[in-house]
Length: 218
Image 1 (cartoon, rainbow, N blue to C red):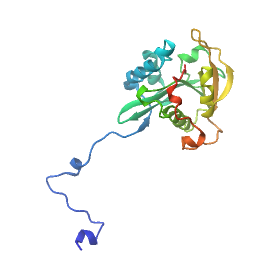
Image 2 (cartoon, one colour):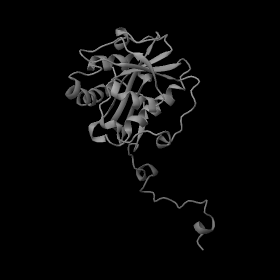
Image 3 (spheres, rainbow, N blue to C red):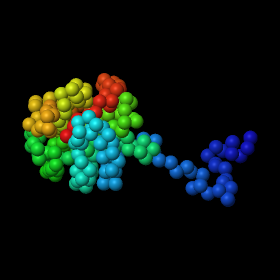
Image 4 (spheres, rainbow, N blue to C red):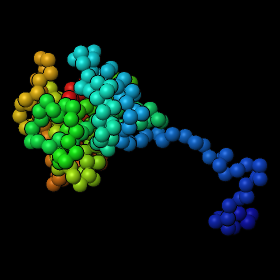
């Protein structure tokens, strides 16, 4: 038996010509969730344009508005990256009223205890993989770690109400905001006092094909 075999805690000596650093492969994480920053704004907007403009003719957030919120409240955004590539994202901001108004579309209220979710979008090549509901689950659990957040709110078209109900959102009623001919339902999720959702998205009935449908959040 060799010395190394007899004493497994001893490591073979490296050749002097090969450093430990050169033996490591510097690769990007296979999958990473992190807050977005202004350097991500163009990638965010490209995904958003593809998801929304062909369907509704406009985006929930224009590029300057994306940069605006990623400057003021980057901690209320979340991006899903695979090997360094943005594949899905959520952008939110703080709000300080019970219901959404037009001001909620452009303002960040730092003293508010409500997070207004402006937009969730998935890159076209990563749809039909359940990434939309998984990212929403991650985001809502992240909000639970922020002591000033009491609830999350959003506005969506009626056909998306069942999707958000499966994520734990409750209907508040018709939203006072309209965009062109589009009307919306306002929904909320109680961040504080809400039972912790199970990590396995399939266990709570997340549909695996929901991300094929554009998510009309404003």
